[in-house]
Length: 224
Image (cartoon, rainbow, N blue to C red):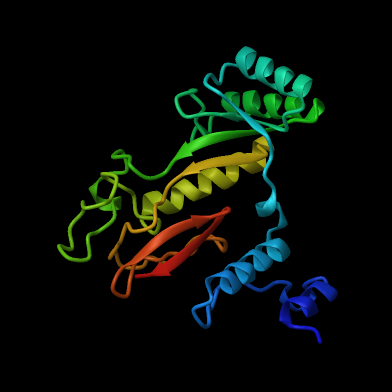
């Protein structure tokens, strides 16, 4: 007997073509193992790349010579990915044509060696988004109170622009992976909802406060 996911796979997801989708994981019962298996199956079908676990190297400099040296080393020993790490100078928010061209060239070099290239990006625990864009504490209705200091709201103007930059950067450079730092479970936000400007973005900061969570590249809202 086929279930809903089996039917979608059989029909190559044709019934969903052209639709905007939201993913809801409805856990029934208290069997943690069964619920965990269900979630993993969803990701295996909808986002199979999320099940990958590549052997990777972090390089602490994003200078082309250093990145190419790391790529060569990984190719020699059988590693699969290089990540331009925290503190390397890699800036996924830099939209200058010169920087885009530089990273695109590095991605092409890595891929020519059979290596994937990714970079680190910090979303949470940063104070440069401004008070109008920080998470709002549902108890005080003021900015502040995030678990790891200041944290931007995903639904703020800054948050929406941030995700636009990430999408544009990966599409223009061909970057193979993003090592994303934040948002973290438990950071509640009571900021009013602003109409989303991208189909792939889901806000989770209203109705009593919710926690914006990243799971394998998917933004989800977890009720608290």
